[in-house]
Image (cartoon, rainbow, N blue to C red; front, side):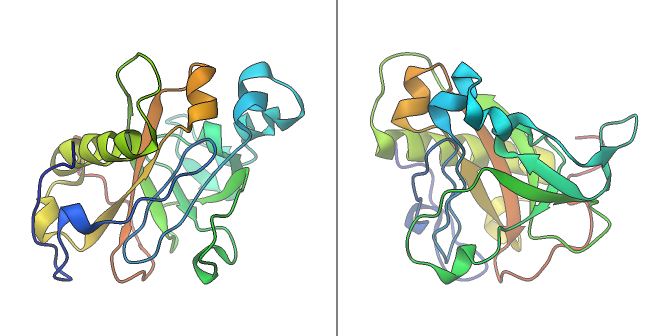
Length: 195
């Protein structure tokens, strides 16, 4: 665990990325630590917190967001573009949220989801192992989906991964998203054509 190392455009390395844990799908962002969460148990048991699976955006037949709307964290699809929740980067504390503002990728946005995968089944291995495996899995999928090597890309990886509570209820899914390392807005779909 611990993943590959490589020099980023900002001089950092893959190993120095700070990964924050979150309640349903932890996310990390370098240089700022961020967290995106939903209701873990509620999402599985479909109780009041089941709102993490809603989608108020308007999508075309291909499933692309064509009109902005809130999307529950468990309903984010590969290819979705979305903004950070208000104030997320202003806090050093982890912040729990249940939804993101999904917007068309042709409009300025903070992040884009580019891959999903499941972690290996088994007993909970610990949050650091989950964070490392999530980052490594997102890194493995980066070049084929984004179309350029991570080490020379102006984009950084933000893995959203399960917590211990979610793991106990069967959530082993990681959602990989990218953002501009300088935190400027993305202005187009960054997934490579044909990916």
